[in-house]
Structure formats: C-alpha cells, structure tokens
Amino acid sequence: MIYRAINGLIRHAIEADLITNDDIFVVRNQLMDILKLTGMIKNHSREILKNFLSP
Image (cartoon, rainbow, N blue to C red; front, side):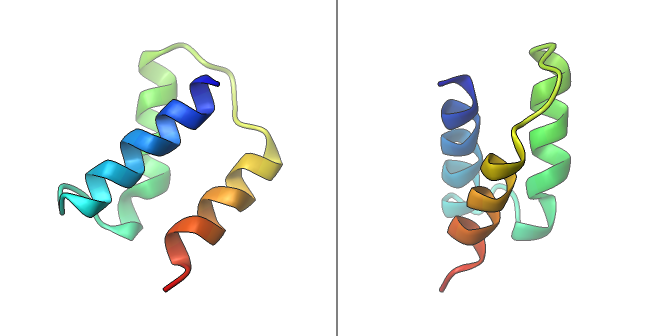
C-alpha cells in the first residue's frame, strides 16, 4: 500500500512537470529513505517502468 502511494506521488509529480522520467528512481529512493523503507519489490519496479515509459 505504501509503495502504491509512492508511485502515485511520483506519477503526480511527473504530470505536474515537477520532475521528469529521468528522476523517477532518484525521487523514489529519496522518499524511501525519508520513510525508512528497505526496498521495493522487483515487480513494483517493473510496474513503475511500464506505467511511466508507456506513451
């Protein structure tokens, strides 16, 4: 659930032109560090890429 919220925040930031697709992993890692999360599941990372890189 928290990972879905992080993905939503990142998606919103991209749509609002606050960050670019190149920033996805940096921003995700920074949010995870702030929230003291250990890591995202590999499938989540693949899902993020598919969602953000699809036209």
